[in-house]
Amino acid sequence: MNDDYESLPPRRANHTVDFVFEGFRFQLTIGYYRDGRIGEVSLAGPRSGTALSHIAADSCELITELLHRYVSVETLTELIRRKEDGNAESIIGEIILQLAQSP
Image 1: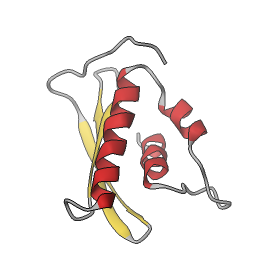
Image 2: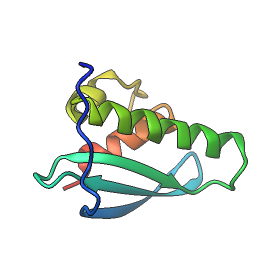
Image 3: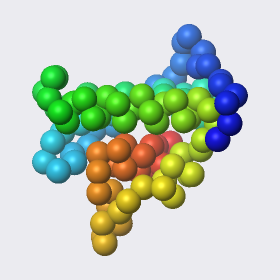
């Protein structure tokens, strides 16, 4: 990681992925740079104001900031904790795995 920062264009392509984690339904919206790289993520799902909604929102902010600072999705994927079956142990890890599977 470095301190360089690449802003997203004001208008950008995005798409939304629906998934379930630990029994909760989520909608992950992924925004892209013009060259197709992932540049931002946001998550909707658990009831607003809950601890899980705050954790999910913070996770997306941190992931987005890392992406803006040229940390690749591949690098993030290598860092997450996984269960024996390969699934993510946390919502943060699941967000990153969803990004890794996006087109």
